Image 1 (cartoon, rainbow, N blue to C red):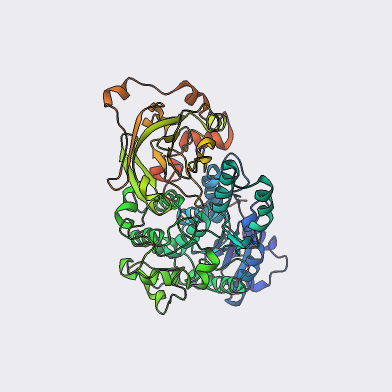
Image 2: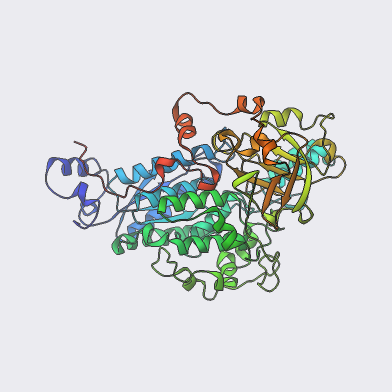
Length: 571
């Protein structure tokens, strides 16, 4: 047992070892303290995180696997963040969750950890924590829900909320029908069934090598998720014996594979911020431009909402993530390892496509160049992102007159005013919604369209902000403009009526004004009055230390890691 980290607590006959063992003797056998690895199950189950409520059941299967392999499983409830529930935005709490999970993993007598996540921010927070503490760690994604139907039509949760709510505002769908669809949308346990952020980050965890191969995308109600969770528990014990840690897995090659995967599946723009943050914790030199450099030429092969038609349980029956990756195997880095100790590419052998409407062949992609596009220019000197696969092709090159909103409240107050000076060629700009300004980068970048344009049949416009948008959302939406308005970014200087030019093929985002004109301007008083100014607590710490979107929006003092060692005793 002396080779195990937990032996630092349990081995010996002194007073401290006595205390550590005695308080844990609540049904554990004597052998639990004599050479068996202790495996924490970092569990984000919570009734207030509806996408993760089933993770207590998943944890039981993980426990059984740990016991079978000779380990001791220990449930460790950790901070859980419900994307649909918490205010002002779930992103505000990702770094807090990562920090708290890291500290609990380091502080406790454990040798390895199984990370249970589902809802958008939970897998990123768990991976950030695991990378910083660097104990053997493996992810179990909670899985997507099954497809709901309304009036015989499949519903994509999130995506169809945005679509149907706009139809109500346009007058083409009654409010009564809209509300009736509510009970049909969420059919089962699990996270969003579109290629939103939750599905994307489960896929990213697998592409990074941090899951049991083949588990990402397994539907939450599917019995195979429990069987794979059992196998993950066994794997965690093996990883401890082998000394296999995140630092052996999360290298530059793994992040290259994640970026290729992100493009091939049409994943969420939120993955950019999360992967940058995870890389920062892992000590990997990943930059915003790498997403465009590596991913721009990768074909989109998955025909899923919001970029396509189908949903996650369709992807699973069609062959799943491995079938997708097998089509782009030549673009993957063969050196990247997984938690099994073997390269990712070795696990793709035999993966087949069973439905070519859902997973396209490499020769017949949904889109030839599908990666996240990184834009630079005088509106985003440090970069902004757009997802071309979810945009209107005719708007990817566009010049229009700016219509500026100084805050979310300003947007809501004026958007549907009949006096709003806007037409379908206008460019909607929302500022003050970046990491510091809001705080936390809310998912408000996919601005609703003005009601008077919806009534004319307009369903997309160019929209620009320093915010994020839900991975379930769609449209010609430019996001994560950095630096944000609240720290003096040029988005703060734009005025209604300014000519704005978006040129995605050229990777440009500009306001077409001379630099000397912009230099004479300052931020609007209405904007600065709306910026977050917390006096205390986590929000104060966050605003004082959060980095910009192009750096992953982590806190500056959390980049990197402190390892697993704890030097001092508690008594």
